[in-house]
View 1: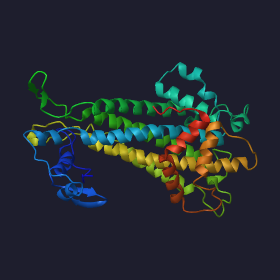
View 2: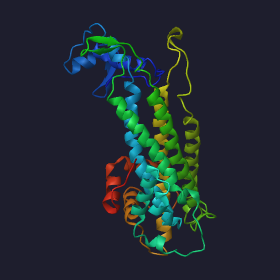
View 3: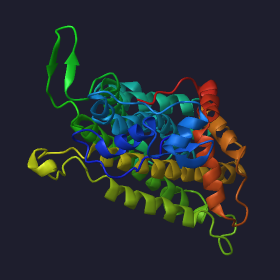
View 4: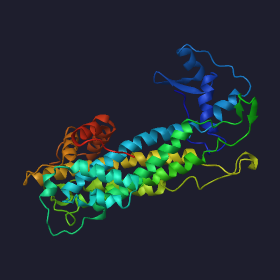
Amino acid sequence: MPVVPEKGSVGASGDLAPTAHLGLVLIGRGEAFCNGVRVSGRKALETIGLRPLKLAAGEGLALINGTQVMTAIGVLVVHDAIRLSKLADIACAMSLEVLMGSRSEFDPIVHRVRPHPGQIMSAENMLKLTAGSEIIASHEGCARVQDAYTLRCSPQIHGASKDAIAHAKRVVAIEINSTTTNPLVFPDIDDIRLGGNFHGQPIAMAADYLSMGLAELGSVSERRIDRMCNPHLSQLPAFLAIDGGLNSGYMIAQYTAAALVSENKVLAHPACVDSIPTSAGKEDHVSMGTIAIRQTREILQHVEHIIAIELLCAAQAYDLLTAEKPLASGKGTRRAYEMVRSRVGFLERDRELSQDIAAVVSLMHDGAFIAAVEAAAGSLKGC
């Protein structure tokens, strides 16, 4: 695996600096990780029985002049974002139940008159996840007229993020099936064309849009976390602690979520609107696409931790809520609760929550979590 600096590309004449480090290993230079050890490129090739390539005319340029790095990161980010979108709906459905929310706002008739694809998907997911919930049924006809926006408008908020993910997926799919080098050789017409397919603006703009979509999933999740922890906004003990006089419960976990949300606001500043001339002014507009997608990746990792905190708080709230009223939760939410509890136990007294958060993040990365919930509730849509 070639050693590649993650910084140093402006995302226009290709990802020249990082792709050069990729190409160096092929000619026996640079560095690579081989069997977990960082060695020279020549040593890495020797270890796997290959000789350094001797590049012919034009091959060096072909190796470095393209959007391979930003696109490769983009493929991984989009893959993880689709999974995270489903997890956000699962966490929201759990929060809806413990906050005594309603299912009426997910009625298909509401969303048919504003048919954004992501909005319809999220509403369908929420209905599936909460189907059969005795908790929700137990407070039908209560005095509350409408839920808070973080619950009532969750299809609209999560749905807009799903649409951003879908757009990024389309852009990345085109890019990985394209040629982004220059010059382009067309053997069928025996000719060469000069162009600008190496310019990363399509990926850069999609990455910035996706950054905003993912940041919003984290923002709305943190508000639901706060509602569960705030006794003025729920029917739950303060900070979900049994003995609030001696224990802080999930108070500091909410701080952590709030900090990550605020950091995401900085990272969501669009990179593609920046440009700086290079190559003595010949390359006078650049995309900053690699910076954009790196920011997106960092935002995604932050949101994973925020959603993990919401899942922890919702599981804690379930235990507190059903201790006095043993009511069944929804088909999907019950399975999600069981999966969380398979890794993290009930918080009876304060302990190091960082380990609990890490355990749930690891669980979220495991495909078995979503698979188990879908087996109980039906297939969920990510974008």
